[in-house]
Length: 334
Image (cartoon, rainbow, N blue to C red; front, top):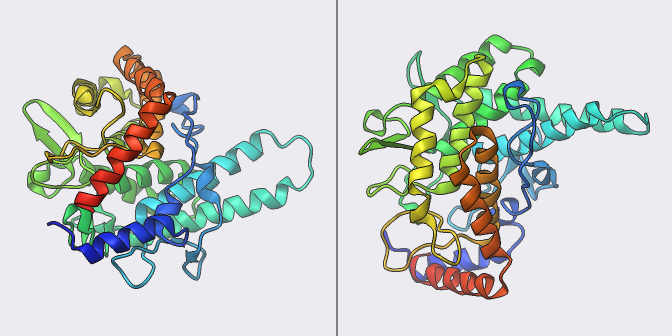
């Protein structure tokens, strides 16, 4: 559905206004190297998500304001990323607390927010059956034609990753594990059966937006795959020996060429007259995600594209061309 001129103008204004959702999603996320099976950190650094937010619920959970909705909205992906950022700060402060100073009070704040995010996600999860369920969004997303309630693999994957890490800290671990298990089942369920795993021609992707034709938003597919990897680590199983995980990893590697615009990375694979280049923020997310995947899997192709796309970002000409292409895309489609 093509947005109206009024919707486009509102989206443009919202993109520049720090009180709207776009400001929450910006930041830097360098890849993090750690012992992946031990779940001692997360693939990318999300500590930038712990910045103060403009809107929050009574219990301090961040809410995001969108130009197409009159009130701030609950976004499960934002809650998971906020929780991950506080969890990383909490873990690191425990690891490096040798000076005493005021770290105990900081630890308490980070722990409080980790538990608040975990409780929020546990309460907002919806079981479809005893076996699977989803976190859903209660607002429309005009850019991709989504009507509430809709679900997204990025929310499921990042909430799974966060809850797995928060699990030892929660008061009801049995409930937390039940939600993680059901969320993983929903994530890996075929889109034809109401799930989020798209299966096409021996390829499989976890869809941030379930659409026809498929969008396969790259950063969402990778974040969701991180969640699937973490679920295997939680069960103390080798994800590389799991055929369902293997096909996800191989599929991303096989289609990376489709996201290479020869000067920048592409955000999704929806067929449009003007292809959607990534913003600078998401371009660098792609680079760091691929570095993490290369480290986890040992696939040289991931590292090759990460290096190529990083080189793109270092060129002033490429950055300018990508910015202008993004402006042109938003003018037409947003």
